[in-house]
Amino acid sequence: MRGAGVKRFDRYVLEEILPYLLSGLAVVILLLLLAALQSVIAPLLAKGAAPLLVLRLVALQVPEAVSRGLPIALLFAAMLGLSRLSSDAELKAAQSGGLSGTRLFWPVLALALGVSLLSFTVAETLVPRAKVEALQVQRDIVLDNPRVLGLGDGRGGTGVVLRDALGRAISVAQVRPGGRLEGLRIVTLRDGQGAREVITARRGTLTRNVLMLESGVRVTYQDTRPVTVVRFRSGTLPVQDLQASLSANDELLPIYLPLPKLIANVRSMAAQGIRSPRDFTALQRKFAEPLAAVTMAFFAVALSIYSLRSGVNIGLVWVLMLTFAYYATWSVFRVLGETGALSPVLAAWTPTLIYLLAGLGLLGVAARR
Image (cartoon, rainbow, N blue to C red; front, side, top):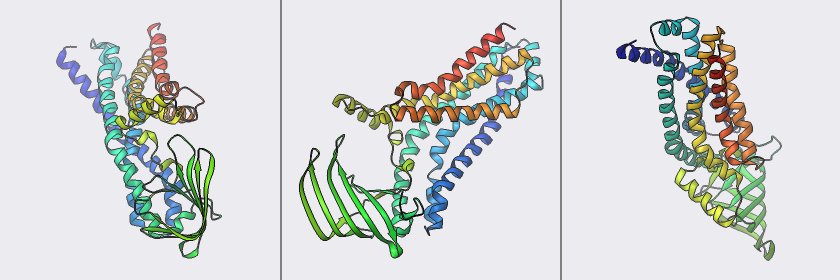
C-alpha cells in the first residue's frame, strides 16, 4: 500500500473512532452531571435555591467533566471503533493490501496525543476558573437563601463549609426557619499549624455583607495553648468575600489549582518539611491523567491486534467493562494517594501504567500466534 493509500487508511480509522469519541464524551459528561445532580443539586432545589443559580452551578461543572472524561471517552471510542473494523474484516483487508498491523498505532496514537493535550489545556485553563466561580455561585446561593445550609443530613446538620477572604472556616450546626443559624464555629488557621483563633456563637444571622453573631466566645491561641478568652453578647463578621462549599469535593482542592501555583505550594511544603499527600498526589495527577489517553490508545490498538490474530471479537459489554475499570482503579488509587497510604507517584501513575503493561502483554501474546 503506497503513501496515498496509507493516508486514506489513517483518515478512515480516525473517521471510525471520532464519532464514538464525541458520543462517549457526551455520555461521560452526562453521568458526571447526574452524579452532581443526585448529591448536591437536587437537595439545593429541594431547599428552595434559586433555579437560575443552580443551573449556572451545573454549567460550571462541565469543564472538569470534559477534562476528566476525554481519556475515558477515547478508550471507549478506540476499542469500539477498532473492534468494529476487526469484526467486519476490514483490518484483514488492509493487511492483505500490504499494510502492517502495527501501522494501526500511528493514527490512533496521534489522536491520543491530541486528546491528552486538550485534556491538559482544559484542566489548566478552564477548570480552575470554573471552580473559583462555582464557589462564588455557591456563596450567592447561600446568601440568597440560608436554608440551603441545612442540606447536609436532613436533621439540621450541614455539609456546607463557608470561607471568608481571611481563610476562616465557618461551620453551622443547625438552620432554623427564617434563616436563623445556630451553633456557629469560626476557625482561623495558621499555615501548616493549628488554630490561631476560634469563635463560637449560639446564634447568628447571615446577610450579604456580614454575619451577625450572638452570645459567643472568642479564644486566641499561641501554639496549642489558649492565650485570651473573650465573651460577647453580639458581634459582626464581614462576609462580603465569602466562599461556600456545598460538598467536600467542591472545595478548591490542590488538583484545581493552576500548575505553577501547585508547584510553588509543593516546593514550599517540601522546604518546610511539611508532608501533604493530597498536594503531592495532585501534582502527579496533573500529568498522569491527561497522558492516560496515550496508554489507553496503545492498549486499544494492542487489543485489536490480538483480536485480529486470535479471532476473538471484543463485544460492547467488554468495551464498557474495560472502560469502567479505569475509572474504578483511578478512584481507588486517588484515595490511597491523598490519604498517604501509597506513594503519590504510584497512586497517580498506576492506573495509567496498568493499560500500558496490559497492552504490551497483549502484543507479546499476539506476536506468538
